[in-house]
Image (cartoon, rainbow, N blue to C red; front, side, top):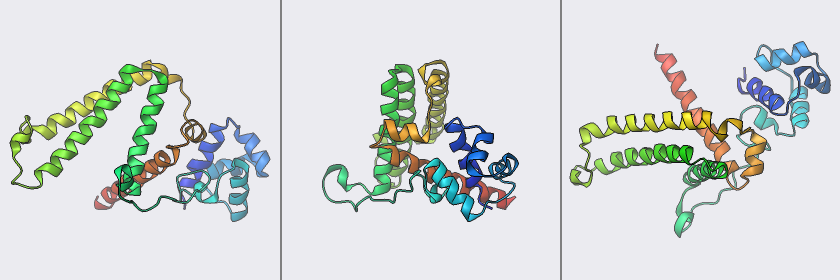
Length: 219
């Protein structure tokens, strides 16, 4: 059974502030049946899938969780070429553009405390992984860093958690708590980066889901 479909049709309905009763009437099914679809109790047929895609103006692939973008836009990224950022691979550019969207969103709020905490968290992530890359060659001089390698990772993780905690406090107490974020708002407010963020989220969730399933299989 497809587990993405129930989640996505429920999300789409709620993002558009449509009641389950109204959606069921518009889609030509009973509210009880739509409730079963949204809870994943029953699987729908092809006709309902297509009708739902038309109703919410999204692609069938999006409803099934096969792509991250509502309209199912194909990956149009070109192979990397020489010169500046163009040398980045499509996945690398997707990651960078996702970060740009986050900072663009934060800058619009003018929430300095939240922006600082997010920047601090991401900076520490870069620092942490660079230490991994640098330390791969035992000939690289460890004096490049001032923090001892045995303590660095643990302290960096602790610092990241601290910045994350600060960001959570700022987000919940500041302007961000009043910001409504939907798939449509992301695409409308940040058209140049929306595709990257939506696809980055899917990549990460596939990774996390895979790790979770592997963990369950080992039990």
